[in-house]
Length: 143
Image 1 (tube, rainbow, N blue to C red):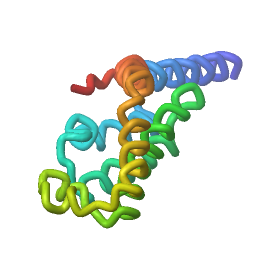
Image 2: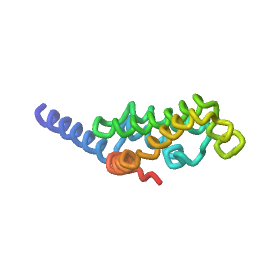
Image 3: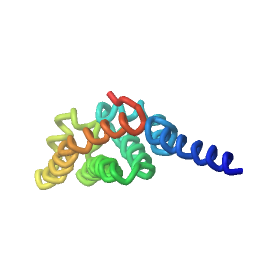
Image 4: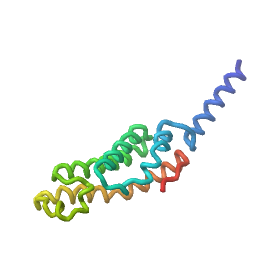
């Protein structure tokens, strides 16, 4: 009986160790399932794409370990803020290349967009921490 208890304890400790080093966890599984979206993050500048990015980031943040959760949450929040700012000024992200539509924005609304983009662009620290964590925690390399 004692041997069995030792064997079970050893098996539990091994599986816990493996889960922390590239093994399966809800967090790593969610990141793995989201790799395509994460690798294309910010490349598609449409309302639909940013809505998808934000939803993906929020889903991963929900499963993220405590030490990286705030970084995922911050990235999700600033992504949502870009969408919110665009909605507030009545301009879809995909219309940013249309100079007539951009010129039609009320100048008083420009700070809303500028602020949202500034916060979005100021997430280098969080993005680097996420890439490092995902590599260490899940053995997934984001590009």
